Length: 160
Ligand SMILES: [Zn+2]
Image (cartoon, rainbow, N blue to C red; front, side):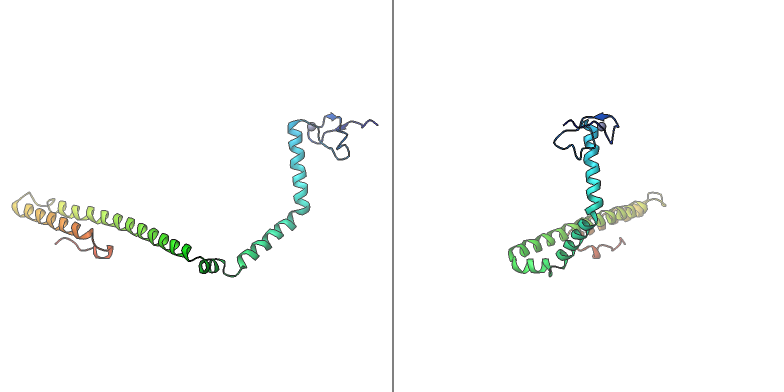
């Protein structure tokens, strides 16, 4: 029995259905139409099952997050992991703190050097000004030596 031709739902051209899938074939064999067919069946599947699928995923997710204290349980059973993880956290914390300290230290350095420069701005270069600038530089260098070993909270003393 010969299967009558149909119009493709996408390109609207007549096509000869494949006898194996003739009962449901709505699209011809052009690449673009096969693609459209696939998308349409996905859309159909989702409109039929999407709600249930989403609900199933959501309830699975709730189950997962409710699973009693997953990380606490995991950590209590894996002491090696805890030791490594704590060390990693400590390292990360120190790295971040060191970077912040370096930034702050750099900024204070620049401020202090500007203070030294400013000593000479208003006055003509006389011995007194030069003296104070040298003194300021020595203060700065001493501060910098100390700053390398200090916490950032102690770095705010000014040159006088
Ligand atoms: Zn087509």
